[in-house]
Length: 215
Ligand SMILES: Nc1ncnc2c1ncn2[C@@H]1O[C@H](COP(=O)(O)OP(=O)(O)OP(=O)(O)O)[C@@H](O)[C@H]1O
Ligand SMILES: [Mg+2]
Image (cartoon, rainbow, N blue to C red; front, side, top):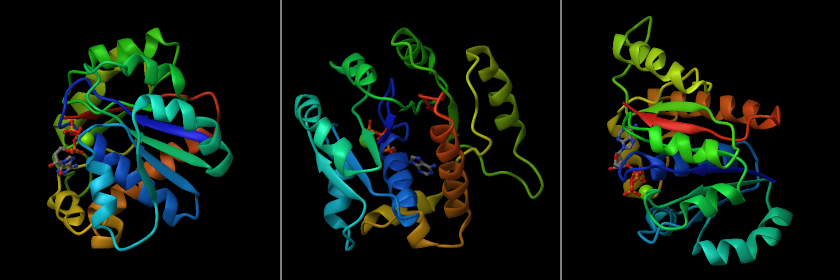
């Protein structure tokens, strides 16, 4: 089983949006995927309750329950995606120790998140979220500058930046993902590209950690 963990220093940076969309993208590609929501807010879990479809599976666990059920989950699914509370919360270090692949959403204040991942001996990569949409031919100067600034962390940066788009919020209202809300929309295209990139990173085995950065 591969795992992708979304972890952030601050709340509201996109952990839930990205958990939901990566899980749906993987499930649509016939992956057996389970999202484990360990945020007491339960946003991913509530999304699944509004949803008319049986996939991706979403369960709500405490960190303790997750530890207890980890071996069973590993036997039953190909991919586990973990939506976590902000990482100032207790137990974040435990979660990072437990899992393979960490995504850290943040509004360009990723220092602590990156530090935590590095301290736990996990490698990392960065995905920009909530970016201004690219122009006709290229990404915006802000995204280019953000990518340059991120070089200091010596972690790979995803070739696709996720833009701030209304579709990401609208799709969730009735339990959909952007790939179902506007199949051929730009938001769907970004998620598919991001999932394709993460899948390759997971497959090459050495990459065990992803950081998601909102700008
Ligand atoms: N790329 C995006 N485009 C538009 N809106 C976005 C995007 N990413 C996140 N949002 C919005 O930002 C808000 C916070 O996103 P989300 O709930 O995913 O963050 P979170 O890190 O899980 O927050 P929390 O700490 O409360 O769990 C939501 O209203 C979400 O719809
Ligand atoms: Mg959340």
